[in-house]
Amino acid sequence: MEQYSVVIVDDDVMSLANLSDQLSKDERFELVGAFTTGAEVYKALPELEPQLLFLDVELPDITGMSLMRELRELDTWGMKVVFYTAYDKYMIHAIREAAFDYLLKPFLPVDLNEILERFIDSYIPPAPKPAVSRPKPVVQQPADGPKLFMAYSSSSEIYVLRPSEVGYFHYSSDRKLWEVASTKRPVLQMRRGLTAEQIVLLSSNFIQVHQSYIINMDFLMMIKDNYCQFYPPFNTGEEVQISKKYKREVQERFAI
Image (tube, rainbow, N blue to C red; front, side, top):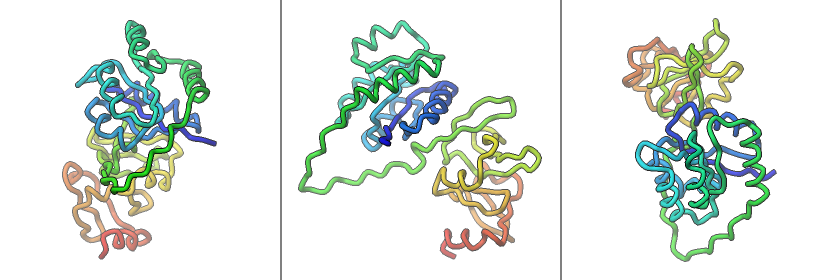
């Protein structure tokens, strides 16, 4: 089954999370990036080369119309753009700007599915890029850039997190779920049923150190008496112990 890459640009975190969650239910599409500003997506787009882009009309640093014109200059792979907004007054402008389609917030699953089906029916793979004699400069994409995931507050608010915002995860035996200490709030909750194995796959920086703890190696400052000490802002939280079962892996990651 062919899989199509998708990027979302929306400064409304709730709308971004809703669209991301709905797209995750369709195995034919893979979310490779989610951004909240035009500057972020403009920088990342040439590396991601998404086949489908959902673009909010009003962003903090640029209008969606202006951003689409700028992104068209980067597009060498045949990307389709769908405007994603709560303002239907932009529909005529979207058509004039040759957007592929228009998704109005809040959307029904059937509305999104119609767009996705039309995209698949009309998709034409781009021609292979010609070989060049000189080597292409290597542009390294930030490892945590496109890997977003959702966490929830105790009042059911949805937060979209980057791995770089996470200090550690703790499994709550009372709630039967993983909690996450992030820079956005003291404690958020992961969805029930998520396993430790699934969490460590979210980032190469995540490593399990205890049956109840997964840490972000970027915030690990030192290990003292089998306890982790973190860089700010995670240096005042609970004590995170490294158990004997996982100690060898941590030592290997630090090459000690």
